[in-house]
Amino acid sequence: MAGIQNIILNSYNIVNNNAPTFQLIQNFSGNFNFTNKQIGISSISLYNSFFNITQKMGNNQITITMPSYMIFSSGYTNTMTLTFKDGYYSIENINIAIQNFCLANGFYAIQNNGPVYFFQMQTNGIEYKVELDFYLIQQSNNTSAPFTIPNIASTSTPYYTFTDFTDISTNFPSIGDVNNCTPTIQFSNLFGKIIGFYTFSDIITTNIYPINDKIQCQEMSNIVPCLNAISSLIITCNLVHNQLILPSGILSSVAISVANGAYLSLQSPQISFSDCSQSNVSFILISIFDQNMNSVVFNDTDILIVIAVRDKLLSRA
Image (cartoon, rainbow, N blue to C red; front, side, top):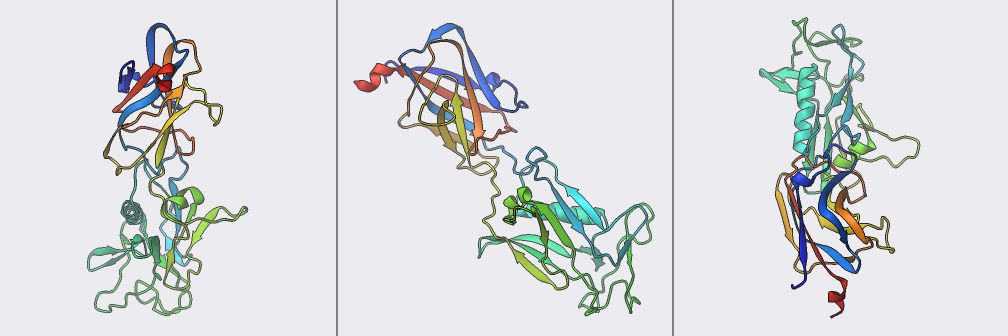
């Protein structure tokens, strides 16, 4: 394609990955006249390194509450908040993090020398949903392998006992006792979008499950789970001015079509060119946003963008 010049930007051109907007800049040797010029993306290569749970996104906390009849050791409460580390989580990863949290805070039972949890999160592939399973905190149905209370002899780790039951001769409340409850879990809509649970109320924005904590139950997600918080990227450029859209500097978009951690490399078979609005400029500035024009953080900044520049008259030949 005669008459096309390329501008290459890579990780060395990143302005500041911790800045509110992810940007790459390439300074020219002097002022360059872009009058009657067009630009487009020839190719782009990057890693899908975007997290779906972060403190910045505000979706990194859930609250777990055990029944009030469980009396915890000094300094501990039956309601605790789990804060997830920034990262990309699958449903399995979230469930493992919850179980590790329960293990660290005494929110479990012991059976056959192993932990038993009263809540789990799993994928329901048949219904394309996420499933929350809640179990009553009571004695095991397996009388030959009863539940026992964890860490009850320790003074440095949390443990619990039970109260307000007519029969507490064993470690756990009797099956069928009217006071038996499941754990409850609370989370915001921001976290709920990830796992597919969302409250549509303008007043109540906290999701609380299960709906009935007096029975063993399963709760199914009410919207499609969205593990990939970033499905595409919008690329803007300081040289572009498109009067038909806002923001007017949009140059192109890129669909994130690979799994998290995978390398995405796109070569445009036919470059989509945009008219340049600037005349004499000394740099090109590329800004990248998610599909909703929110800021993005590249956890792997190995990126390569090739910008093609041509004379506007070439498109009329």
